[in-house]
Image 1 (cartoon, rainbow, N blue to C red):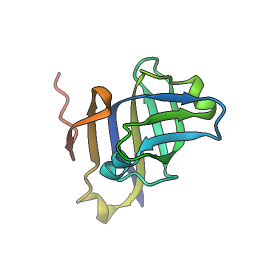
Image 2: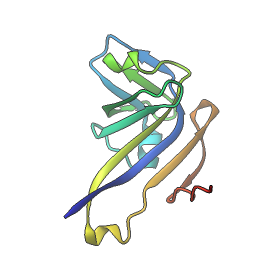
Image 3: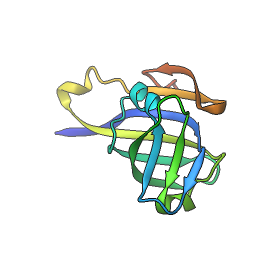
Length: 126
């Protein structure tokens, strides 16, 4: 049996571009992709904090150091420049892999600068 688990997350990224007449996908600064361990062409889920839209696309490599987050193609109707989004990737893990699994969490602040990283989501308090 395999379980689908969070693999990586870019938390509170700011959309810098939305290009409707593009083939599709989400371009992400290559440094951020590497830090999160998200591969080019990997399926990602995007959650728009501003309007609640949720959609699936794939990651493409943007220029390293550019802080680029570009929503392309039809998805450009769902998120625009300035919107805060959460980008997640998921993977299938075997029971044996689950014991040591830790997601790569990258937290962003203004300008898509990394504020910190973690491997555990804090426990939610009541």
